Image (tube, rainbow, N blue to C red; front, side, top):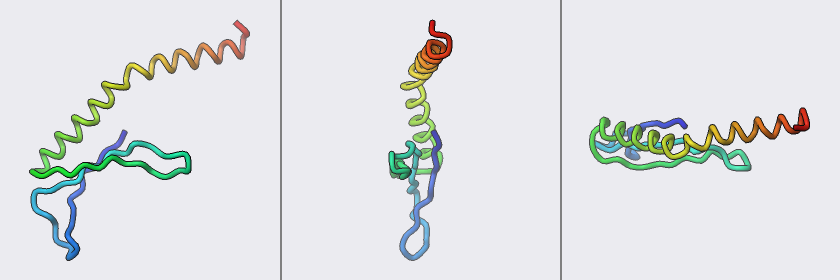
Length: 85
């Protein structure tokens, strides 16, 4: 999972004070379109960085238990197909 912190601009090209966009890549849709989660943070860049880090850590903590089980399940299925056990 990748994330970005972006400083937004006004239409005239000047930057907006103490405002940041936190953008997290969620993956691709079936048609190949990229999906993002975007949150506007009002405050310092440090606040946006804390939010991004917390959001990524929360997601990894939430789904990290799924990955080992999926890997074991895939290995078992491949062994059954290859060796018939």
